[in-house]
Image (tube, rainbow, N blue to C red; front, side, top):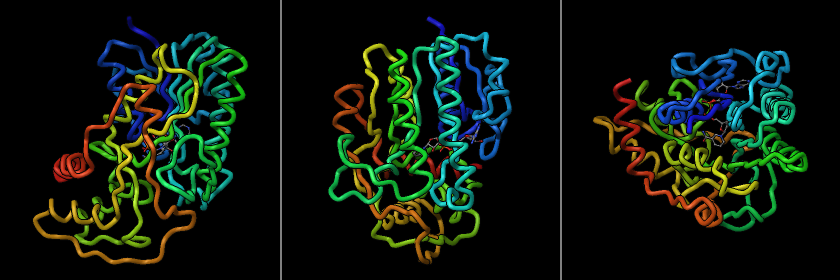
Length: 307
Ligand SMILES: NC(=O)c1ccc[n+]([C@@H]2O[C@H](COP(=O)([O-])OP(=O)(O)OC[C@H]3O[C@@H](n4cnc5c(N)ncnc54)[C@H](O)[C@@H]3O)[C@@H](O)[C@H]2O)c1
């Protein structure tokens, strides 16, 4: 059955892949995006596009007559590092937007709200892997905003709406913005290597992350809408530790000329190492990540070389 969806951030990396998947299945999609990091050409032509800030009620006004089957709130300022440049702007994009859209959802009778949260809410955890029951200790303004949004979602459930927060770990893959050198660890290194033949690493090679391919993240967003998935918070990750040194190795192994690597001090709020426990997500969603980092990254490098 064809449904109607609102996707915020549909001009960005994850949002645009989600829009394509929804449209491929015959659904109608409305996108709101302010094009701060996204591109108009990323939005599929079949989608209705509204350029604007999703924390602005005026932008939502023309949609008050719509009844969406679900709202996917993907838009946001997506970099911990950038959140330090302007914490107020970060709060507006990542917190105020959630509240404005939740209010809109309730007013228009939308029954499902699915949110792009982040593993950054865990900060530097005392033990690994991190599961959804563990204490959160956000280290950046960005992470505080993501955690605040999760709590707003929880509180809004009392009005009868289903809310799902997906704590995305490090998402990468074809279509990632290679012009944004402040968001996306693997994509930043890759973009630098291809453009300059050099990679500047901010922080140590011992840091590690849990990478998950964008196609598997989009599968999680699609499944989150299903009746079988209860409201809650879910880690979306592989549970595989990938060190910075390994990212650099995979990139250099896939280049004709290996890039020269230089290390400098880390950025404020950067987490040292996080790897997730995906068991709760796997059990409830019935999805297990199959794409290893080396596999997915090789495909991404092949795509990036053609850009
Ligand atoms: N990429 C990752 O590894 C990752 C990890 C955890 C969480 N997330 C979250 O997933 C979401 C999507 O990330 P992405 O990697 O696709 O980033 P992205 O920057 O490519 O996409 C974000 C999109 O939101 C738009 N946008 C930003 N602020 C907006 C606003 N106030 N109103 C309307 N549109 C706005 C941007 O123009 C962009 O198109 C973000 O909320 C991010 O915080 C991403």
